[in-house]
Image (cartoon, rainbow, N blue to C red):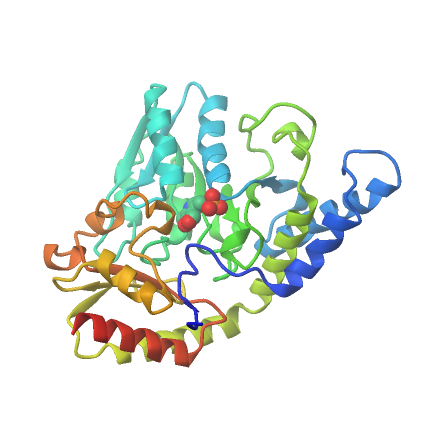
Length: 372
Ligand code: PLP
């Protein structure tokens, strides 16, 4: 059988074995509904409480500021729509042109409801400049939503400056931290974040679970109405096993950020030096998510590259993996004004902590063989 080289970690990551082991008892043995008063459910209630504490600690928040959701998409939708629904009067939202579609499509819906949304352009490396935000922040802006790191090109945004600009004009600051959490240090207080979206499957946790950090004192409308779970803001029986898994995964990844970063940056160097001689540009900023490598090969076809690499057992993506059904040129690559000759030849290789130097040599060799 062909050896699989998985290099699409920005799309999703492998479940950590410790995470799986931690989840198992809550699926097979301690399956009680955490809302029930009997002692069997005390175990799940305790797990819920402890997981919330662990997650809060990882991002410098208080446990009661963590609301469990089904993932990044739900957290993004909830942050924006929940804000608009609870602030009928003042709802001018400012976001960027390179957000994930969970934000952009939520904004389209918000515009349909009659609210104003402004989309900030980005620099060629994908950063949103605090100055461009300042220019747009007129007195009616109520919420700014800028991602912490971009999923297609890995660029990390100057979040502290962006949140400072927002607060100076009385606007709240939300960030989609789905690609960042577990990969770089995130401290909500230090970064001035009011709301933050996260998703466990991007940091070796299970799929279908995430959270929204909602700073104490901020009111947004409930995401779902029903029972009193998640302080009545997100009704529905909690997925305890997934929540426990997310907490274990986040704690482990946060603990290992330094080691993982060093390893991934070293692997990036090996991969890139293996591509010497090919005509390509690397997209994104110097300050990027470790292992997120967006490459644009001149006059090449990224789609073809993906499929030819697949035949060799290598998984990469062309642009936004969540959008691979939509094969149009990515909105991110358009926004960074990538040269026409390179734009179609773009692939994203996103490395994870399980990748090896050998993987890098094989990926580089395969790309070389296909393009030469
Ligand atoms: N936001 C960003 C930046 C993402 O990269 C993704 C997924 O790729 C999402 C949101 C959606 O997250 P989820 O898959 O958990 O719904």
